[in-house]
Image (cartoon, rainbow, N blue to C red):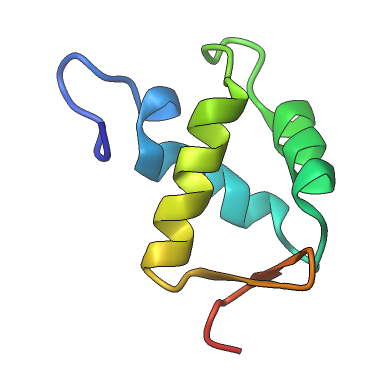
Length: 80
């Protein structure tokens, strides 16, 4: 679930989705703005990304302090 493996492609693993999120989070933005950027930037051959998996990946990134959240805005590099 977190890491890709034999039966789980990278575009479905939390770590893979998290990497897409971090790539799209080049500036501070709201969750809905980031959701749209990630959706637009996904490979056309990738599995569809549900909002649940997106939020689960955000939670994972927040837990490892890769992103932060302040007054409705997501911030890259959570320790800032």
